[in-house]
Image (tube, rainbow, N blue to C red):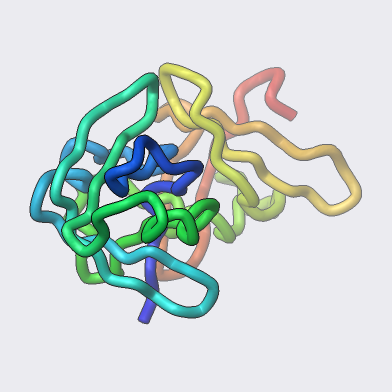
Length: 168
């Protein structure tokens, strides 16, 4: 079964079994609701948990799971990832994609010139930036805006772009 990360447990909080989570999902208000089920990826062993309490705290989420009541129970989850199974991913609007769908796609220009492969996605502000790994060259930073990204074909594994002046 495929799982997708929604956060990373970075520490415990208090003595009643809360964990401090660094959020890695774009949908924290949906993923971290009371009653939602998540999976803690502890090595190769998925551990299913249900959220009993959730609250924001200093840029992180504090979660308490129904299955665990004290700090000793949750200490072993430190540095583990929280994830959702593939079927728990919601539908996205037209033109929106999950990061795992974009990373690994081949990038080519509207003229058919292959540029490289998307290796990372940055989210510095107003729009995402795709980091394209080019053979024998520096990485190319592509802003994800309509003027640059012309087509995303997930089935073919190709992104078609029109490079603006100064991007090369």
